[in-house]
Image 1 (cartoon, rainbow, N blue to C red):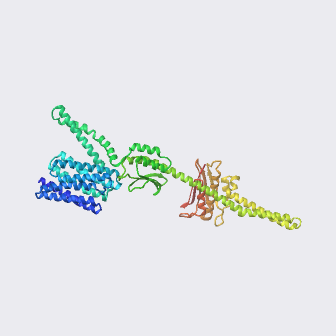
Image 2: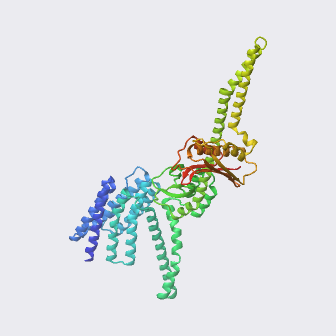
Image 3: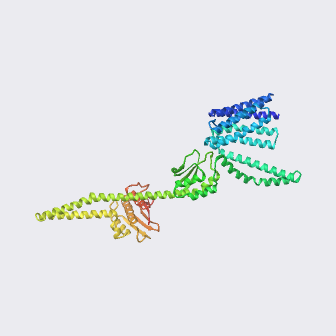
Length: 581
């Protein structure tokens, strides 16, 4: 009955390997898949032979599958490569030892010795391939190691705890998982983080082995010292003392095994310290510091979904962390995962969350610097445009007029004695041209800075100009101007911008609001001059941005301020904030 259960378990394992091997062949894993399928068929045939009373045939078949077909299939998974000396030696050793094992199947000692050689060679070669393979092959090898290691580990524990045929059945049945693990390693290696599974399995196995060995050693010493079997209480206390070392040992072994299998992982506290001390105002240098401290292949910063800067080479699997930038802007830190990883470790996550505020501050500083540079460029462009306008006005308007005055003066001088009446007409024309030139100069000066600002001051100048405004129907525009807490000396640039903005806003009220009243309120604090121009017009909806509104916004932006304009249920409203130096 029990023997029949073992044969059923073997048949299940063989069927799993045959199907898994066929699926691997379908995925073009030719050699490994074919050998795995062949091994599965041999195991099924051996189980049938054992069930039909042919134990020798069953033993030969199982030996051939376990010592030759399956080890060579694992050695050539996920792809066969014997060009490198290490690959060639490993394949020759495993295949040669397997052939010798099959030829000496009846000698238990030879089978055990050669089986140990095959197992050690397979473990060493797999470890070597994990160290040097590409990321995808490394994942496949990790899945294969998991498919062999976990069933082997559980089978060993079951055999140790229950050395009966039932334990053997359980141990054999678990190898049903090998073929599915190998298929997943080729078809869907990223379905879960296999690195974490392998590390946890190896760490738990080593820690458990150390714990069991420590407990058995302590119990044996108690028995030797006391000369009798220790009492249950003594064994319980011994187990408690030995168990106290389980967690620290597991933590220590986790770092060691993780580094041995998948490379160096930095200490989170040390990495955070290095990153914090290295982050400055340059986002590129900040990303380099993060990659160096956490040993990451790639890092990038995005702002509002647009890539800003990047460092390293892009990888398939990434992790995103949100950065709070303020002002409605959304930042994102994107880091590439290391080869063999499908997620960040808890330590790496903690480091990145510690440095995220610093990265956000770096992005804000970079954004402010870019805005400042843009503002400087716009200011320079505005100055150059103003100089171009002045040059054009002087060259095309005032220049020809002054030239005409000079020519008229020459003509008057030439005709002074010969034609007094003609000279008088020329002088009259000369006087008119001179007056026109003076008006032209005044216009140019007013365009640069209204004289009323220097003669009267900003608020009286606004009141004076407001008296001349008329509505579309010809009615005077009644304007109320209030000023509160204005500094005694407003910077010239702020004063001109405020004057132009208020007058443009009042002109828009007169032309478009449909009412004849407007209110202007000016007040200042330590940081800015605030302007509000309101009317009781009936216009509703969003105002279209014409030349007037665009001009007001440009004047505010040139000083680093802001301006908004629109209408509501109570009428139109223009609001401007001009920073004070």
